Image 1 (tube, rainbow, N blue to C red):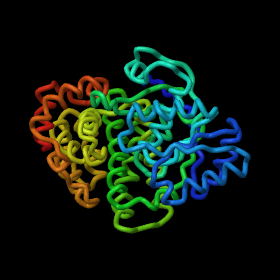
Image 2 (image 1 turned 120 degrees about the vertical axis):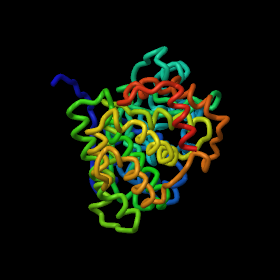
Image 3 (image 1 turned 90 degrees about the vertical axis):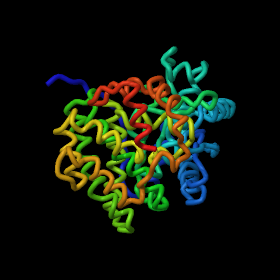
Image 4 (image 1 turned 90 degrees about the horizontal axis):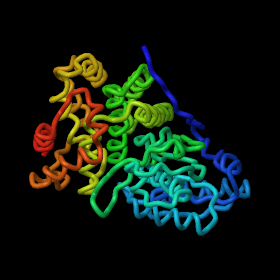
Length: 375
């Protein structure tokens, strides 16, 4: 046994702990940029955060233009705003898109080159503004890792900025904030969280710590997501889903993701589809083609999904997706056969490392065939 594990996360976890954001922020300065979206405004979460900051004499400005599948250009615009206003920290309040954008903003505010230079590792950069991450969905796990996934609107590349500097200084995980999600969003982000743990569990880059945590993340989601989706609103179940989401973010920080995410990023980069729906269309098809390459691990996944072994893992997954209203084909999302050559090429361009992490070694012909099978 030979491995390394490094992840300096600072988690404040529990219902009602949003109230601690003011004291947390006061340690990093007196002027915060809150990066958010309309849902936090409608739920009242933004007003609550601003009040908690005001109580600790921390001024706040708001940038609320973040959209699903956040753009490099949006992060650049907001970073310029943060610099011009003298902000000394960034607070991300929202789902995965918001948190990823907030982390990128904090990095760009300290580094002067085009963000794509850092995404493609042409330059390393140095430093970032302190980041406070407050997730309002239980899917991304961005509060627990060093990734910020952005889409370049000029070419459709959806790829991660990966820097230890953007691990949040503090992450406040309060499941009360998540209970306003509509069911369709809960299903999508919940399946994304399941895929994070599942892919880390399968990854060639995994190790004992990630396997242990990933299995626990999968166990929680397969035990609790369907019940919560069907209206079982017990606080303990929401807490568990929030924790499983954070686990998913933590394990992919070390083990990375595999083929489902590698193939989905080109989809949402090209078509701007909901990430969890793209994963739901792809993952069962990929599982069918891959189960024989890692039978023991796929058997373990199948049993968590109420299946029997690796041979029925894909069917068990389809049954699980059906229970959360997430049975979907790529054609439902506007993907056509004519898109497949670009998707396949882009998969290797933006996600080569994730393709290599997959337990089965697939070339471009196989990946094109998987896209076609998922239509």
